[in-house]
Image (cartoon, rainbow, N blue to C red; front, side):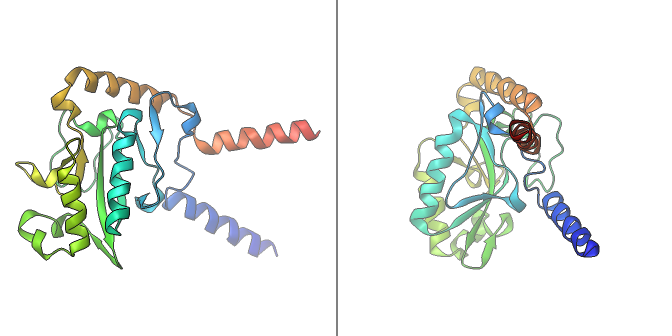
Length: 206
């Protein structure tokens, strides 16, 4: 019996730790400017939390609508990125004023059928080989005047999407950079908020 309980605890903790579920998530109730995104066709890679600035939230919602329309799913590999956090597996060198730092960008992979389409299959020279559903999704994004697809950049980054706030409104980028950083640093982890609620419940019962 004890061995079974011990194994269950090990597996549970391992799942939360290695799949970034709950353990690393921040409580969105403690945010003023950041927001946690949840969509029917969009999920975080390995359960990561998707964080964006509130003003970028509607853009991500539109991405979800395009995904629904074209029957694809998106896996978000990176959303808001705190300053000084290392970037793993970057396709291009991160910009000094990256829109990720202001909560105005997401990196993604496209899922269609049983296949995950990553950057190497989405560069311009490979574009025509993509399934129609994936191509039409990208074309919908390109047709949206408020969204930039990284595949159209001079140095291609086909798994990147943003709204060019760093170019169109540098002052807003600066403001949102500091707002996101402040929210992130001062946020409460979800597990702590959950634990506080449980302890409060015990006190009320007692």
